[in-house]
Length: 418
Image (cartoon, rainbow, N blue to C red; front, side):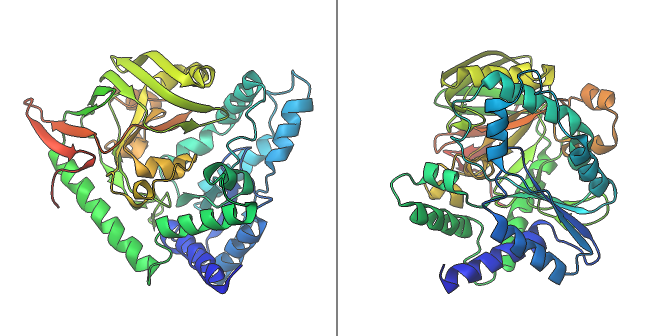
């Protein structure tokens, strides 16, 4: 690799630790995979760089949960068919310990979208539900910002091949790294300053929306005519957050969105996805119909069986937990690349999420019991699955309490100034 690449890799690692996590001197750090499909073996050199820089920044202790998706593939192919509800709880316990003690947590989300394409969908669903249940205590604390956390990605061969199939293997990896550097503002003269300015812009957007306190949003685009009710006390979030232990952090790199929580029972109409959804199986060209907040019909040209499995996770998976606004002019959108990776694709497009509502996007939501959260309009679920619905044809209005419609987005771009 070139010296320029090495320099950009160093800058990316620093951005992750300084802007994303805002790792504090004396703080511990856990580096973990997003799920069983995340490859740490291929990313070992990058993980080692992150660990080195974390210690140089003053981390007290760094732990890494290594993961090899090939082991998961072997399990699906050869393990006893009645063994898939088993999962080691020590991983949950370790992650929970780090969370409860206010340690920093870095999650890596990098996988081959085609690795599991021919495997038993029923078995994969059992594993997914088992892991979701076991990790519920960790996920609930994370969604309440108990500590500073971050999700990032880095290229692995199968992912790079999916995104750039016409290049050679070495070119695929190099190209994907280069795109990540661009999208994450790594190539700018001062990436940290660039991110601080970007976060200020996001905060200006969400401050405007928080002052408005719209009763609902109306979304219209080809294949989409959707009204999303918003609960009283909803909070628009985006860019950086503050953890319960007082640390400012940016939970996603990249991030281009401002988001809030829909009212569980107040979504009506039809929405059509504008990008494929990469899960265990790729779901493409799908449309959902909502009534009183619940999905009452779902169609898909590809991956319908996988789509149906989402709704079987639990009752809450049939309702929305997030609405996020992203301008079509975002750097990821303008790259014109389909990344087959939700962390990137969701920041190219307005999106909504099925499942768990963002607790800190509701006033005092992170302090509410599950029952009180639901009664305030929040949704509860084991899962939280984002999918993309935005385009350069998307128009969004905010509807005030008296029914007045005010423009928020026109043709995929912001319709108000800050």
